[in-house]
Amino acid sequence: MEILIGVVACRLVMMDGVEGDKENEKSPMSPLLPAIAMIGIIVARTFNFLTLNDHLTRAILFIPLFTLFLMNVHRETIYKPGTGFSQLLAFKPLAYLGTISFPFYILHGPIGQLFYKKVIAMKVFGQVFTSYPMFFFAYMAITLAAAALVQQFLMPRDSWFSKLSASASGKLVSAFSSESK
Image (cartoon, rainbow, N blue to C red; front, side):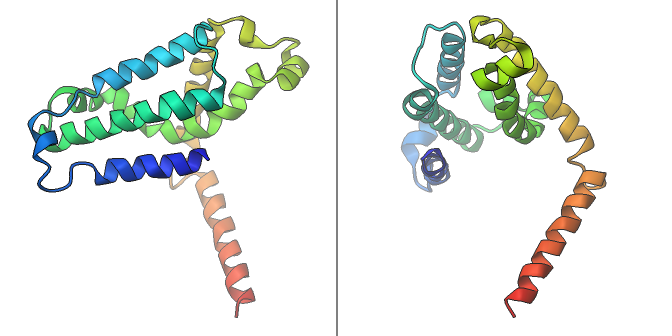
């Protein structure tokens, strides 16, 4: 379901601001407001002020705000390039976070389960870290460090991992293409 919501959100961003859209050209809304709201949701969940489950939080709060955020960044970038929020996003540390966003996305779930999934955390640590709200920041730091390491050592085209992945992909393609003949 979330993948379909993501597809719809992507389409909304892509179709936003079509030629002749004078309304958005005149005064695009600042992307700062949805960004602050998303940060507020994360902080509220961290300190148990917002007790919705993950799926409801994402589906009814976070994804619509994120879509609105992307649409407004897109508008600002097109109609007012080099100003406001798009200029802030070009800041080198934030650009680097964008660079490691894919490994972060891939790793945050498994690392989060290590600390927060009861069955796993109890076996590994003897406790679940949900009772320590401030541990969330340690979890984020661990995930950021892991994403930076993956980006540095596994993602470059000349890394051993990239070569292994390319080799495996080539073998799979040749295996399936020879079967279909």
